[in-house]
Length: 583
Image (cartoon, rainbow, N blue to C red):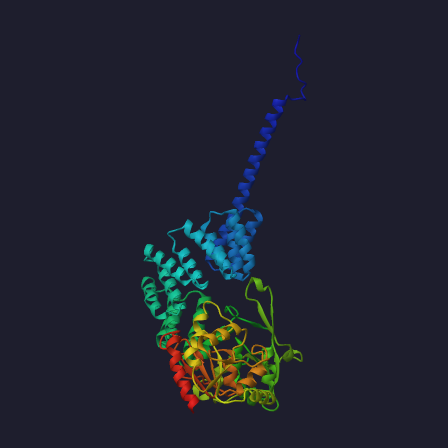
């Protein structure tokens, strides 16, 4: 019987499978060739981006990287460069997400680990950053970068012993790596061990004598040791070698505070203007469409002075405002923008001025420094003739120590002064105390003493101690009283943080205020109360090269012989206070 042949249009099952398999291979090959073409085109833009970045054309680099990601959504290198560009623009959260996406595409790229860690660090995600640096070290144990970053962030998290061990171990393996010597020096300096840090900074400089950052950091250490001439020389050297404009700006700012601290006010205040450059890390954009005041005659003009920096600085810098009031004359108008808590106090102190508050807003705040300051009360009827940030007029109104009149300039409410004077009636020298700022982190803690360390001072006979520490300090007061067997008086109902009118009136009733350099100290000194500033180091820049604070009428500055050695300072301070009480 003859076999029936298959019809021409029908294939057997095995033949169908073979055809489908062949088609699948062709399709896969086509996709592979198409994918290779896409990757080749995408890589072309990646190369363009790298070249533009090296030439400093960061916008072109970012645009090329964006084009590369549009062509090939799997190109990790393209997303890596795009993340770097976003980071440079200040879009930190977007950069972090882009770095994470690049890492998902290529988890074996160690540079992504370091960049992910750095970005998390900038966003205060310290634990995550430390983990990234540890992973980088595991994949690149012979690279100093991971140890440098890990040790630095461990120090900032408060684990300085771990930081020292991380960096010491790395130096044992890589003693020729200058960045590790610098990192260990910085950890020591931030721990209050500036004297020890010098030899490590100097070794970093020996290994790499033209690296600007090392000189900057050495200047920082010298400044903390009150060796200001050497600090200034180090900053000068840093500016000689610096290549990066951001770093140059930071160094210039550090040098400005050094010069001011040396009493070289004209030079120092001139350098200090670098804070008004938009690229400065703490720049605050002011929405004021008026010429900036650079010392031009302002008789008959409307001049707006906008407070800046912290609350204590707002008060301290205000010392010269009466001079501006005279300069604008009876036909002009001085406008003063300050923290809302200071408005009524400043209005009473400068009754001919118009005082109001500034308003700060954030645009895309999670993505970087986009703080904007508005002054609606001063601009609602038109822009002023001139405006200035509050520290700027110091450059031409206070160019030498002799320009400071040493007069009280804040006027508290007379009725509230009488109220507190009645409440504080009694025998004994009335001494207000304030031992720390509210803004305490690992870096700032070294500048302040703990109330526990005030025992010798608190036991001074003939003295009534009155708490002027703002914020919640109930536990600290209770512990100090139990430790030292003394009573520290509190003024019931007075909110020292928010009621600055009350704080000023109460301060005016004190005989002496003893305080760390805080807003409480500034208020007391500005109303004319004798104020003793307690400093961790031998001199602070607001002393302007003197042994006191020239901004105010009656001040003294006390500091230990070794940085932060409060245990040695307190008995000496107690002896001085005992003499003051006997008067």
